Length: 506
Image 1 (cartoon, rainbow, N blue to C red):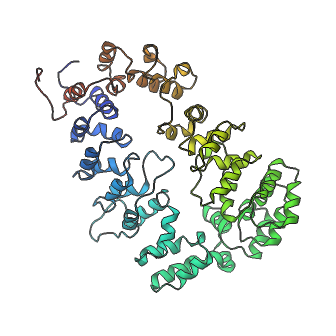
Image 2 (tube, rainbow, N blue to C red):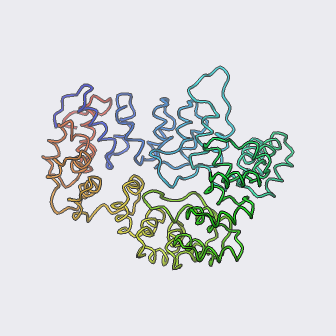
Image 3 (cartoon, one colour):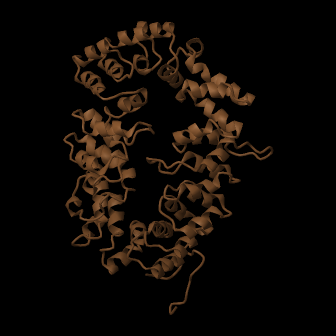
């Protein structure tokens, strides 16, 4: 490899990015990249596992852009990321609050202490910033990093600001929990509870309901108490009937009319409700639409309203569109019953539960409904490797997540080298057990395939070293795990990065 230092150039940037992504790079190599001259490599550090000493250095680094590497790194433990909850930089706090990048699922919750710090943060007078504490809180609330268990603990938290946060989420609470907040000793909490309790007040909801179609109108009609007047208006105009059909507060007379509506999607949503009487359920079980009949027939299982979100969300979507569902608190026996059901809809639901026992995992991995094993691959840590690989091939939109799973096969992929999808070819091109080096893929039409082939440790050393001088392929070649620590340091020396620069005989 040439030893003359490079100035800032496409080749230097490619080498920096490649070294940063190299899975064999030791701590001392990665630490060199934290110098200001290593900035082109920082994006690559966001998405890779980091050794403990590198994480410690990054968390305490004086440059906020470096600290953001940990704030948004999904491989770093939440306890370590959570240390940045009171970081002086709002951009670091915002990165932590919005969650790891890329946005993958499932998201590991932050520790309670970090959540409390972010939820109770206030803007510092005189210190302007791009983001306010309220905006950062909003990012946190939608990030998936606040578990339902924290919301329940928040009801009795000693800090009234956290109890007020619980009150603001109260359409997910029981009437007993809401009553506790309404009787809270702190006036701020009581006011928050009174303001939020309108979800149980049909008149308050009716007064707040916007006439135009918008997200807030849908939220109200899906979750809040429904007055007779609102129900009649929706039925008369044919608006928002799907929302009305799934709202547990919809008046019974309106539910009965929705159950006979011409739109099968409306009838199917009614059939998933937990409060249907026997006569209406029997009527829907004989519906002309197969999906409606299926939703009604699954009432053979014990059903509660807590099951409705799962029943409503999972079955009609494909794995490539839905991925793991939102957090649900459903009893294990219900999921086990779903797993052995004759209905594919229920087996899809079972496949989304990550605690399903191993014998049922094996059963669902061989399910004749193709979506069942795919959902299993996305959700269950014991999903067989061949099931995960099949899901990777079949579900392009979920590959970013599937590629992070340790169960995704990285070897034995020769049969995929000629696959029509370049992402699949790239996975195969990186296989270190190929019977011959993937030299032909170095000229593949897709750059991802070329980069993966350049990073394959099967490549002959002379071919790999020649690629290190090619700006187009140097990034892949520098990420090749066959490179030694000494060679990686030499590459960084070439870019002019500070450090190392040992004599040739060292």
